[in-house]
Length: 234
Image 1 (tube, rainbow, N blue to C red):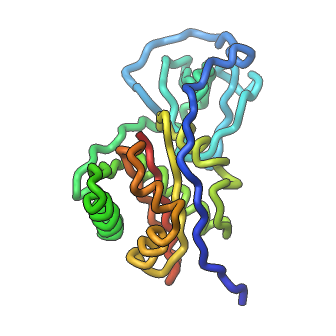
Image 2 (image 1 turned 135 degrees about the vertical axis):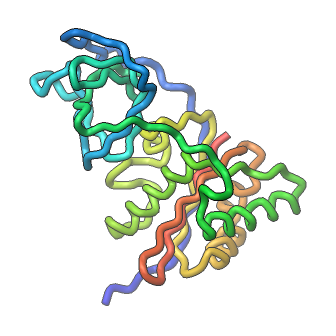
């Protein structure tokens, strides 16, 4: 039976400028363009091609995983005209997309384990004279995808074979930031994970950072193992 190593990896927050438009990838779409009241869409298939036009004959700009959110510009037939995190305009097949509506954050939106960890984090911040972090549904949904991905693909790392770096993943999900960070843990309890975070100078620095105001908690339980991803943004 494979032995599972229980450890924590630290990644401090990083600051990124807003991405510029990659004009080399912007292509004129073809067909009858119509406007739509839909503001954002999310991929429902495992992967979906982002193309230069509204048919499978057009060049593939990039392939995106399930759960990626795009801003909608309009429609051409059953295809959505969208832009990605780099403001590149392209088309995606509407059969594999659904309308995306970010959930509002309320205590009822979160699980008992998420609220338990939020309590530990904000207690630490209060004890250090800091304002509490706001737990958001959008960040938490993204962090959950990362935790589940680690469990499903049997790895423990900030770099995902599915989504790339945490920052790539955040941008692909429509999460904007000037500063962002990720903590990950593999533990058997929420309290145990929090204690491990606070005993690590790097993880502790993220939790007590004045650069962050928003928090996402993604918790995925696999038998007696709990994968925990904490996402921080400003």
